[in-house]
Length: 164
Image 1 (cartoon, rainbow, N blue to C red):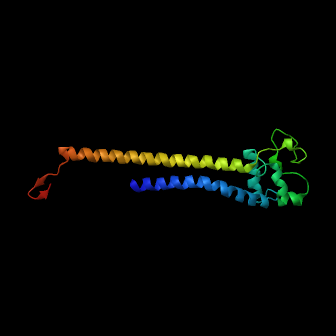
Image 2: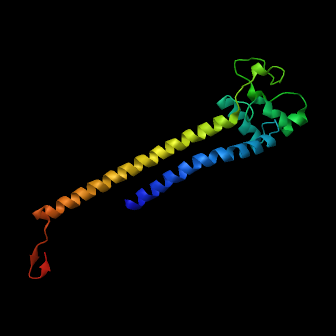
């Protein structure tokens, strides 16, 4: 019981530390993934970016203009962002930067960090709940031990220098 409590306390501290670490690492990681985007949706980075942009309703790292700094944008030379940046209410959106109102305005980095923090908070709350249940169990065990020492029914029976 005690070891599990210590382990769950360490887990909580690790996840609290991760919350602050996540913000620093997400920007670096997301920049690398955006630079690997090729627009064909056949490789993992391209699928991941399209999925995140559609699910979180975001475009680019900080906003849609971040796409101008990517290799894909420079190679395609069509002055547009991926179609996954298009708002679903716009029927014939092509991702062109000449119509920015058709695109999601918010960047993905802040939304990804927010989502990761939410997930980590659930894990922290679960670990705290587990630790609280363990503390309650240890308290109950202490109460039973204290009552046992005062109850004559729990005394050892001694007969001729041997225990019965």
